[in-house]
Length: 67
Image 1 (spheres, rainbow, N blue to C red):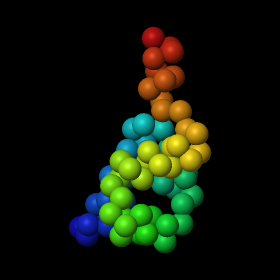
Image 2: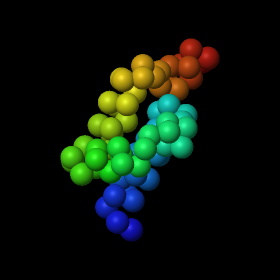
Image 3: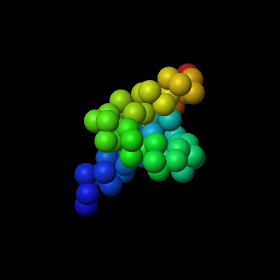
């Protein structure tokens, strides 16, 4: 498995775990993902930047509110 494929899978997992969406839901062009990976952005950094840009609330907020 290439480093990029691993990075992409990790990014997808983080999105699912934190925001209950995946890269398909996000709709980001593959070129944009590749550019982030080539720039050395970690999967976590990418997800945090994306969440900040689109003002996403983590699912943990909703889980806590229901408890």
